[in-house]
Length: 375
Image (tube, rainbow, N blue to C red; front, side):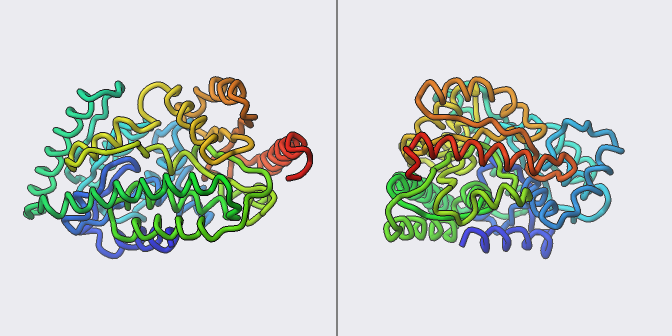
């Protein structure tokens, strides 16, 4: 269900770019939905272009135009594709500063290239009510920007309804993770990425709420838990076939959760739509010190009864790379064995497919032994 929804969301800005707003992954998109605008995902198209195995041309072009080799591959693929003329011009561009330092360069550069209006939502590093209030005010400014650009008036009641759906969807997904603790639900690594898009740029839509309800239904009807259970951090390198052979649709080895999907879940949200959207980004596990992300990971590992954690250091992601050693130490101090994997979520030129799979297989075997060889 999330796969179909994500693919349709990729088609919409290509079919009707005049109704598309280019966005970063963590931008609250409910105001766009209310105004009938399609989210045009930079990171999403980076994934899809990698899926076509065409990323190399765009990566090389972007680097020839001055982007460093160490820049995030998802962003670099999209910039290369846009500047080579593949990607259509959006109506305007919106982004947050959350999580990825590439956001500040990527979206400013694309706004200049396409010559379109640009709005940035600045997320404070500190995580308290004053930060929430600050972001809520910016979200109101963003709505004013959207109204000015589109000539439409945003319906407050429709926004409240969309944000309420977002809150219910995240609560449903949190309940789903709890139910998964005692269930075996074989899946594929790519599925976590589809869920991540559903729970970010598509959050607030009826389709995402339906997806989370289906997740609950699947968990309730699933067989009892078995096999090695892994908690994954960051994006999944879906292009690495040997790694997929270890984890995909395997009752003996399952990725039971990914922090790209649960980082925004909170115990509760405000009834005010602007406050609720602001809470989602300010209190995101990806905001502030990396220790917050690690703590959320430990909590979720216990919630889903994970046997071990994988910390995937995607090339160019300084937040993930910088936190790897602290993550491993903290998880293992909490009794959760942890594998730090270096790789790239979308750039095949970095290679290492065999090494990734070999290290994963060895880690899984160690976890099986820790379970008494019963997994």
